[in-house]
Length: 130
Image (cartoon, rainbow, N blue to C red; front, side, top):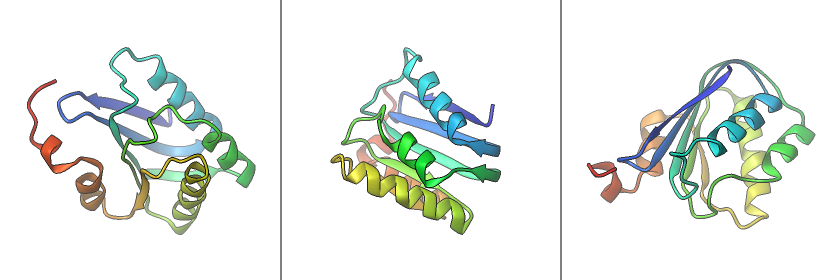
């Protein structure tokens, strides 16, 4: 599957990774898979790595379809790490659409360390409780 995830309960973080050729259907399937996971908490933060993506097939309509609903809280911090200008533009479009729905916790990054620092509030970064 082009998108996979791990849930780090101690840091209240969903770590998602996309790889290979990715479509809107892949991202929607990823959302459904997370929703079905009993460990998923919509109030957690997320970091989504697009760093291993080799190609994408997303139209503007696809971005709108993915952004039409969210599985995360409007207060969740969601960092997306990209490597290309095309990825950056698509994520910015997604972010703008989600902001129209009151979701201001999405940021796009090129630096994975910066993204992780932003996604996890400092007091949670060193938490050892699950």
